[in-house]
Image (cartoon, rainbow, N blue to C red; front, side):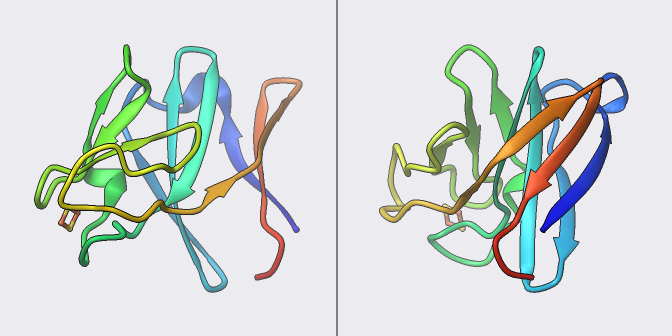
Length: 105
Ligand code: FES
C-alpha cells in the first residue's frame, strides 16, 4: 500500500513527523532532498523516535528517552541502550510528492 506523506517542500528539515497507518507507527524525516522513514517506536523501550534529535551529518536520530542513536537509512541501532534495529520503509519522491510504501496495513 502506498501512502502520500505530503510535498517534499512542506516537510520540515531534520525534524521528525509521526504517522499512524493501520498497525504501523512511522517516523518520517527529511534530510536535505532525501526523506527517510523508520519505525517510530524505539526498540529499547517506549519512546517516539519522531521526537528525537536528528543529526544531519550522520543521518541519524537520537532517541529522546535514553539517547540511543539509529541510522535513518538502515534502522540500525548504533549505540546503547538500544541493540535491535527498527524497521525501515521505502520512500519514493515523485513530482515533489513523498510516498511511503507499506507492505501490510
Ligand atoms: S527508549 Fe529509546 S533508548 Fe531507551
